[in-house]
Image 1: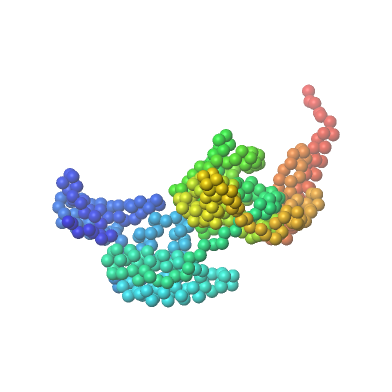
Image 2: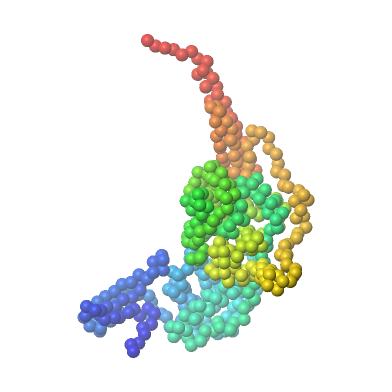
Length: 483
């Protein structure tokens, strides 16, 4: 049996035309597929010699890949060679942050074959206490348990590859003691909070976005990347096939998280009517375009900040955008939607994922099913268990005091906060011809926006007044007819 060639050595094979072929992988394309170079020769020896020349010209520096190389060089080689082209851009950013900001500076100089479990364990402990590089004032000096576990996952995968390549005998990352895995607390809005939230969202011009979210449970990136071409108003079908992410302050449109995330869902008739009416005022291919540039989608960070503002003004608890997804899933299960349908609707890989996340609801559903069986087959009068809904102080809509914005005088325009660092001033008067026209200005602070808005209003009023005078003079002046 021929010896299996190691990764990076290239490939030698005898072709059906009687020649030998040597081939190496020199890079990968954007989709992760290998880009190769090849040589041919009449004999195996000659082909092997040509392949060595090809490797020197295009190949990777495998001569530096040795058991005693620094671990920092190995994990860098592992990431760029085996990992980078197989993961999404946003995931690449996370990997690079962990590898180049934490792993290499701390344990990068230790030889690969000398790295021990104790080295890794001490590294995790130091990072847990004082490994944070940014926002120390806000979050403290240490990293979260989730980041520690992610750092360990990168180290373990890189070392596992080193084992398979024969560089080390055992993986020192196996058996390390890690912080416990904790899932984020799921927060669900109650019925009264949903009503107040949507009423406030309507005032903030975000009603359709959050209503669609509470009616479908889409991920934030998915709902912001929707186009009008994805929605069929006749059949009610909504196609989810892309998402938007922010990387280095740039919006990136990419494929959804998993294959199961590419899906088609059916919208109810009431939601279709609302979206149909909403579409009449939108001049963009995106369903929820940016208020600044309608050729782009809304910024996910801006939507997150606006969500918190609306929740605060509506008297609702502080929840994440993802908790609106949890709210939809919880309501759907409570209303009788089966787990398989819900899993396909929200884009989970399998029903097992849905059951695991919403076990507090699915367990109750199983108890209800058992009682139904007992009632119909056993002929008993067993009491049906009820869903335990959260009850919070002030949940009664009658006891809620709505947010009362400052009432502006007619003719002074309006100021809207787009996000933390951007305010919009708008003035929409009727021009000299009686048509409504909108004028907008933008500023970084509310005070600056008010000043710019006042200047703009004065200029617009002066122009409209001049236009009216000009039209009046044209009407009063006699028409001269020449013969």
